[in-house]
Amino acid sequence: MDKVGILVVSKCLSSAAIIDTFARSERYAPEFFVAERQVNPLNFKRAKAHAVIPDLDVGKIAKFAGRHKKDIAFGLTDTEDFVTAGGRDVVERETGIPMLCVNKEFAIEASKADQRLLFEEICPKGNPRYKVFDPSKYQDGAKAVSDLRRFSRELTDGFVIKPDAPARGAGVGVWGKDFKTEEEAMEFFRNVYSKGRVVVEERIEGEESSFHAFSDGRHFVAAPLTRDYKRALDGDRGRLTGGMGSYRGPKEVLPFLPSSEWGQVMRLEQAAFEKWKGRGSNPGLRGIVLYDALMHTRGGFKILERNSRGGNTEQMCLLTTMLDDYIDVCFRMVDGSLKGIRFSSKASVVTCAVPLGYGTGGAKSSGEEAVNLDRAVALEKKHDGDLRIFLMDLRLDVAAGRTLMGTSRSVAVAGVASSIEEAHEISVQGVKALGDQFRHRDDVGSSADIARSREHLRAIRKPKG
Image (cartoon, rainbow, N blue to C red):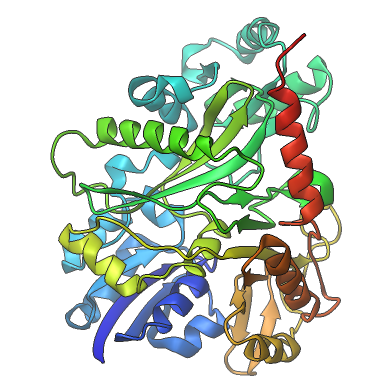
């Protein structure tokens, strides 16, 4: 098999799943050159060359890549931090290694306000009502609060307050969950506004999905819809987190949506992409060019936000059910021949194991607690590909040979099966094998949660009268 060198820039989010998928290639012998914020045990074990760059400084990453550029065919990343900092631009300019992510010009994730302005241009139908509050346009915060009071009273179903800069859920407030009175909302707004621009949007009732698309700069290739679980606790309660898990079903569309909805989403997303791209091929748009959070509402769907890379757990659902060799997919993105990607008719459920206090306000992990993965790894081997363990915020103490728990999501466990119900059972079984140092959401991809989503959507779309 041909050797293929791959640069992986990792924040220890979905990089272990990316590397695992490449390592399963039956056509190539991948060699990994990993630059990451800490020593992920699995990434370190598989890397031909490894560098710890805690702040993921793009200059340092480029220097690391430059030392190995003769051996690297392409690179990719699992973090928006690298993308929005112009990491692709720097690495390609200094090393010539093609990076499979958007360049800085198209890293729209850097600003919630700029996203709304972009959607006004390329996809107005998908834009909710919104208003940008910019401190540079107000003499004082009191006037901004006054304007927000007026605007919020026009939004009969409530509103959402978002910091302009990406905050991975932190700083986002939702009416009815994070604040329940006008004064609570104003206090929340003041806190976010003190740090910079704020986007306030109408709160939209519906059911969420995540839409991913790959591109080589010319062709638009959609992936099956996935569902993300953003809050810390079962029943979608608790604080917003970076995501507690995801699922995809055996079809392109999620099981609580009518099959016709897939075509509607595809048509609007592709038309918006063509406007965004412009005529011909646009080399700035390459890789997973968009990951849109959608809300399926009474009258169709709205785009809640656009991300400039793959979703952390959603991407795992897609990678574990991708039929094409992912290395071939990446080569096709590099050379401009990506006309499609085959995904299996299997379901994938990813459940995250997290420290006990994560997202609950409880005591945080010290970051020094040892973790034993032996039972879970043995179970993974027993399942022969239907259960996959992806390490996230775990750190290898190389000198002591110990794996240590971090403070964020620790491990993602993917279950793959012919049905979502089976995949859910496998995933939860894998998480429980990690032991009682961790907690997880039991309802990620559960039959009860899917039934709730289906009934909720049916209720809000029921004709009035």
